[in-house]
Amino acid sequence: MQASGEKKLLIAMIFAIIAGGLSGFIWGETMMAVAWLGELFLTALKMLIVPLVAASIITGVAGLGDIRKLGRMGGFAISYYACTTLIAVSIGLLMANLWQPGVGVDFASSATTAKPEIGDVSVTDLILSLVHPNIIDAAANMKLLPIIVFCILFAAALTTLGETGKPVIAFFEGLNEAMMKMVGWIMIFAPIGVFALIASKLGSAGGGEAFFAQLAGLAKYALAVISGLLTHAVVLSALLVLLARRSIMDYLQHMGTALMTAFSTASSSATLPLTLEGVKAAGVDEKARRFVLPLGATINMDGTALYEAVAVLFIAQAYGIDLSFGQQMLVLVTATMAAIGAAGIPEAGLVTMVIVLEAVGLPLEGIGLILAIDWFLDRCRTTINVFGDSVGAAVVGKLAVKQ
Ligand code: ASP
Image (cartoon, rainbow, N blue to C red; front, side, top):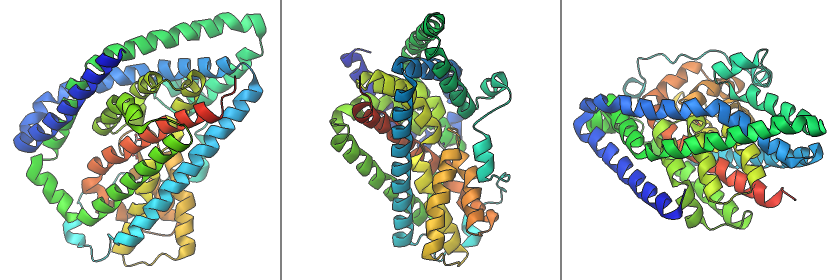
C-alpha cells in the first residue's frame, strides 16, 4: 500500500475505534444492529488465514534455500519468543504482587453465575497438538499449529528436490502474492469492520454503564493487567529500537491497522493477514516475516502469558492462598507453556489457564471470578500479542537472516 494511502487508512481506523466506542457506550444494545458488518469483516479475514499461512510458510522456508538456515532462523525465533514470553510473565507476577488485586475481593459481586466451560488441558496435550492425523481436517477446523508443522516439513522437503520442487514452490509463491493482494482489498473495509465490532461488542455488554459496573467490580485486577501490558509494550519497543534498529513511530504507523484490528477482533489469527501486510510495509526482511510471523501468531503470546500470571495470582489472593516464591516460579514456567498452547482466537487464554491453576493447586472455579471483564482484557492482551509478533519478526529479520 502507498504511504499516503496507509496514513489515510490509519486515521480512518483511529476514528472508527473512537466512534465505535462512543456509539456502543451511548446507544448500548441498539448497536447490535451493526454486528453483521463486523462479522463480515472478521469472516473475510478468516477466509484468508489457511491459504495465507500455508503459502507464507512454504515460500518463506523454501526461500531460505538451505535446511541449515531454517534451523538457525527457527531456533533463533523460538528462543527469542521464549525469552520475551518469560519477560512478560515476570512483569505479570511483579504487577500482581505490587497491586495485590485479589486481596479483599467481594466474591458475591465479582463472580458471575455463568460457569466457565473449561475442559482439562495438559502440557502433553499441547505437544500432541503439534501434529494432526488429517491435514485437511486441521485446515477445515483452522488448527494452525499442525498446519505450520506440516508446511515447514513440506517446504524443507521441496528444497531438497532441486528442479522437481521448483514448480511447486512457484505455485505457492503465486498463491502468496494473490492472498496478499486480497488482504489489501479487505483492509479498505477495515475501518467499517472495526467500528462495527467495537460498537456491537460494547452494545452486547450492555453499553457504557454496564461496562463501567463490570470494570468497577474488578478495577484493581484490570489495572494490574493493563499496567503490566503497557510495561511490556515499553520493553518490546526497546527491543525494536535496540535489536531491530527501527524507529518506534515509523513502525507503529505501519502496524497501526493490525494493532487496532487485534483490539477489535480479540484474535491474533484473524489479524494475521493484516500483521503480515503491516510488517511488509515496514520493510521487514521477507524471509523472516513469511516464516516467523505465522509461527509467532500461533505460539508467541506475550500479552496472554502476562495476563495468565496476573489472573492466577489474583485468584490465589481472592481465595486467601499465599503462593510461595517456588510456586510463583512454577507459574512462570506453566504460564509460558499455557500461552504457547493458546490458540489465536478470542478468550483462548482463559482455557489454557487451567494448566497454571492445576500446577499450583488452585480451584478451577476461580476462573468464574474474572469472567465478567475477560472480553475486554482479551482485546488488550491480543493487541500486545500482535505487537510482540511483529517486533519478533523485525528482530529475527535483523539478526538471524544472513543472505
Ligand atoms: N485472544 C488472544 C489472541 O488471539 C488469545 C487469548 O489470550 O485469549 O491472541
